[in-house]
Length: 106
Image (cartoon, rainbow, N blue to C red; front, side):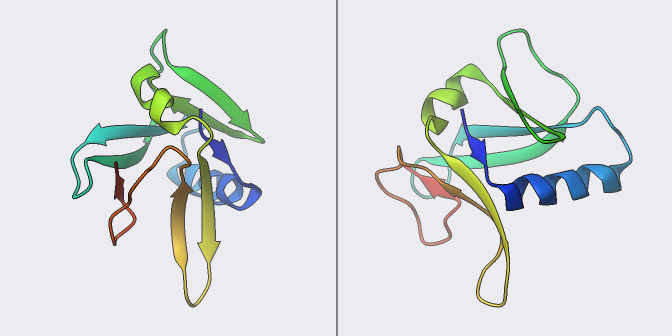
């Protein structure tokens, strides 16, 4: 299961609040594709399947499907808002290789 830093949880909470729908969860998934084999996908979701793994970070609920969870074990989602780096990033110890854009891995 992926962990969220305090910065990531705060930004996700801000985005959920902006959506105006209190039952939204952040779904993090790994899909086949991208230039390195797998790519990350993140979106807000209200549907939680019986076999989904869930975690709560403050007021933020995170949902991951079982097959993605295997590839995200030990991973951390962070958010930075600076001049050099801005946006979400995933530090995944399971990734043996990442592409230049940082959005896919193998």
